[in-house]
Structures are given as C-alpha cells and as structure tokens.
Image (cartoon, rainbow over the protein chains, first blue to last red):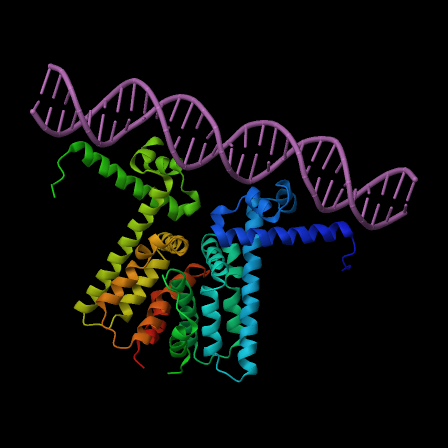
Length: 186
Length: 186
DNA sequence: TAGGTTATGGGACGATCGTCCAGATAGTCC
DNA sequence: GGACTATCTGGACGATCGTCCCATAACCTA
C-alpha cells in the first residue's frame, strides 16, 4: 500500500469525485432519468468525454453515485446515534430530527436514496449498499425485542417515503410522537 | 351520460387499455426507464405509432399506467379489509398475507407502485394517486389512536420496500408478528 | 533530458429516442 | 350510397443518446 503521490492520479481521483458530486446534484434535481454523460459533465463543468474516461460506463457512474450517497447517509445515522448516546437519550428526538431533515432540507438526497432502493430491488449487487443505514442501526442499537426493532426500522422507512409524497411534509414536532410510539417498549 | 355504442371508440378504448397493460408489464420487467413508445408497442404487438395516437405523449402513457396500477392496488386493499371484516378478524393475518403476496408473486407490481411514489415525490399532481391505497385504509378503518394508526401505515410501507431489497423476502408467517405488533393497541 | 504513463478534451459514429405526417381502413349517420 | 369521423399504420425527421478514437498536455521515473 503506497501513499498517493502521483499528481496525475491525484487530480484524476479528484475529478472522479467531482463527477460523482455532480451526478448526485443531477439526480436530486431530475432523478436518475436525468443522468446522462452530457448532463453530468455539464453540471461539473468538464467536457463530456471526462465521464467516459473515469467511468467505464454510464451505469458505473450511476451506481458509484448512489453508493456514495448511501454511504453518506449511513454516516449520518452513525453520528445521530452517537449524539443521542452522548446525551443519554433514548433517541426519539434525534430520530425525529433526522427524519424531518431528510424530508425537508435534504429532500433531494432522500429521493436519491430511494432511487437506489428501487435499483437495488432489481439488481441484487446493489442491495448491500441500499441496506447500509439499516445495518448501521442494527449493529449499533441494542435490541432485545427483535419484533419491535423490525417494526421500528420499517416505520422509519415508511415515514420517510410517505413524507416524500406529502403535500406538506411533517415537521420534527409532528413526527416525534410517532417515533416515540415506535420506540416505546410494550 | 351516453352508453358506449360507437364500435370505433370501443376498439380504441380497448387498445388503449391493452397499451396500459403492456406498459405495466414493461415497467414490471425493466422499470420506468424501459418504457419507450417502441418497447410498449412491441410488448402489446401493435405498431409504434399506436402509442402516440392514444397518448398525447410518452409521459401521458407512463402516468396513466402508474395511476391504473395504483388504482388496482387500492382495490386490493379494499377487498382485503372487506375480507377481514367478514371474518371478524382484526386484520393482522390478512395484512401479513397481502404483504407477502406483494413482495412475492406481485413483486413487479409492487416495484411499479414505488416507481410511482418516486415520480410523485417530484410531481405533486401524481400524489393523490400514490396515496390512494393509504386513503382507502384511512377511510375504512376506525382508528381512535391517530399516532398508532400513522405508525401502522408507515410500518406497512417500510415492510414492503424493505422486502423488495431483501435477498430472501419474508413470508407471511415471518411478517405476521411484526404486523401484529404494529396493530396491537398499547 | 528522454521515454513511458496518465489525464484531458475535441470531434465523430451509429443507435435509439419522441414525435409528426399522410394515406389507408373501418365504423357511424343522414 | 355518400359524407363524415375515428382509428390504424408505415415511414420519416431532427434531437439526443452512449461510446469510441486520437491528438495533446501534464506528470513521473530513470
């Protein structure tokens, strides 16, 4: 394992990440249907052929983008739990806040996440990436009641996706009692 | 309101419905990305221009198809509730069975339903159609505890979409305790 | 400095796309 | 039967697509 020193490769890797970031912006704005070599390149402000050089195919770019998006979301979940723990909280408030953020300011990113879900439904190789944030929650949270935990996880996904098709997305305050209900031991 | 007698219009309406059915099969097999005038026409065994005649645009065809699919699903939910009532059941078994069917044999249709969800997330005019089965449940079921009901609805959606990205989709027996948990008053 | 390697970018190719058009066909109404 | 209307269909147009090719520039190694 050698540390990255080659300036060419360094620039290349940087552009590759810029292309992924640009592709994510395109997905947030127009959905996966709007992702083409040209739209992504234009979004990144680079020539069209740049995307074909750094990704062996358009599908490669799409998959890399969605996986990157999922990783970021899993990281957020990780820190949310960490934050809840440091406060000694049971997490309901943190979860409700994260949900409100996901269907509000980060709405585009959340839609991208569910585009990944749908892609993963048809392509098994994408499923580990799609389940990533679920795995993070599962591994970090102690759950003695398996059924209650499964219900909680399902509830989170349902609140998110239903929040995306609501005309007026619920706020953290409105979500709070439902999350509380899902977390309450019974 | 006049009864349909014109043979031409009758044939036209029939073909229109055949095109919607063909489009749904294409969506089930390849997703919305696979829907083009030509693929749908080929699936229906009609010339390409037939789709452009009966639908003012490809988007029209796509929307009509997804709305039709959502209506069918809402109807299924309706009869599920009716079935549960006639048995005097609280519905857990019926719900679990419907979920298992949705992520098993009717997997393609369920994926189509969530493609509609994603489209509706970006286009408000599609949201009523996407929420249709939610509305059926809401209007038919008596729910004294609003929070519990919201949690139940979210749980259903979560179980469905997570079932789509499971490597081995859960069976009705495995879903049953979770549905039970979500329905249990507490 | 010479030679090899990697990234960049302009241009082009064939394929496929949505949509339109004009003629043909079939059903309706007087 | 003739005028009218709705449906059907083959063919075509321009636009856009993914991808490839090749010359150039930047960088590293020896």
